[in-house]
Amino acid sequence: MAEQAENSNAPVVKVYGRPGTVEAYMIRDFLHRCDIPFEWIPLNSDEEARRLPGIQGLNDSRLPVCIFPDGMRMECPTIRQVVEKLGWFVEPSRSEYDVAVYGAGPAGLSASVYGASDGLRTILVERWALGGQAGSSSIIENYLGFPEGISGADLADRARRQAHKFGVEILLARKGVRAEFPPGKGIVYLEDGTRITSHASICATGVEYRRLGLPDEDRFLGAGVYYGAGASEATFTRDEDVTIVGGGNSAGQAAMHFAGYARHITMVIRGDSLKETLSQYLIDRIYSSKNIEVLTHTEVVALEGKQALEAIRLADRRSGDERTVKTRWLFICIGGVPQTEWATEVGIVRDEGGYLVTGPDLLQSGQRPPSWPLDRDPFYLETSVPGVFAAGDVRHGSIKRCAAAVGEGAMAVALAHRFLAAC
Image (cartoon, rainbow, N blue to C red):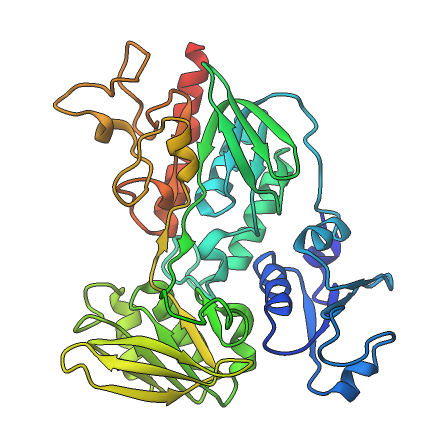
């Protein structure tokens, strides 16, 4: 699996493209999250674009262009095509697995490592890139065992290599579209028609980044608007003004990372302080940084620009006063929304926010869910369908910390063992 990326810092992929395009951003973001060394070559004029053979100018639909070390050239490739070229695209080797894990964030990677190391036939399916939201973090400093900190991408890549060592089959850029859970089995159909069958399933799909819900938000994606900590874009913000929306740890980590590049960083939060949402070590660093400003009781109410983001409009939530701030960089770190609509279709209980309800939280006045078919209570991380477990941020009541997600992934495997032993 991309051994060159693991053993060398030399670029594996050269990416040529016009700055401020979502296609180029998605490729950069994917490569960064998967810890694949790459070189970004921005094309800022038609003349620069025409230096690439066959490209007519900046608006050529064949951009971005990816060139690999063997000379192969891909024009406006999909993530699936990049995955295939890197040698990371595989087909399932088995008709059935003991455990199928969905989601390759900290919880899913942990579950796959523990499942395979315990001897379970394990497959890990991820619809996008390794690491989940943690994969976009520039540095995680409070994770046990890494006193100097570790980037989310590095942590995810180490976990991937560990999972690979134990024999986990990893399917990247593969999205599930439908699921069935007959007694003792989980059957999930992927968007390309692949069918995954397992005796136990672990849902560790995390959450999708929450959006502001403003006009033009989708249009500016990759062209000034970004979701998450944005580690892949930090070096491009040198001497620029950056705005970060959100007051959680991911926003604080992003602010500190950008502080080494950007001229000025503005953190926009709706509350009256960071104390309720941010770890103390980050609060201390933010307030001691000369180029970080925190705007309280403030929200972004409009995005402005032609082809790319040029400015944002901020509103004071107390007075209602609005002002326009020029910026080409807006990073949104306001939590996420679980993508669990599929759970309703198969009868899995969710809470009002869409999170999967598990274990004791399924009991109402000590009574099991009406649809529960077994003569035992659901295991701690087990959903309302026997043999289907939830771990990490997707689970109702979970602690939103990387270490907690890793722990839940390991626990889910232990509980899956108990379920499989009774089958």
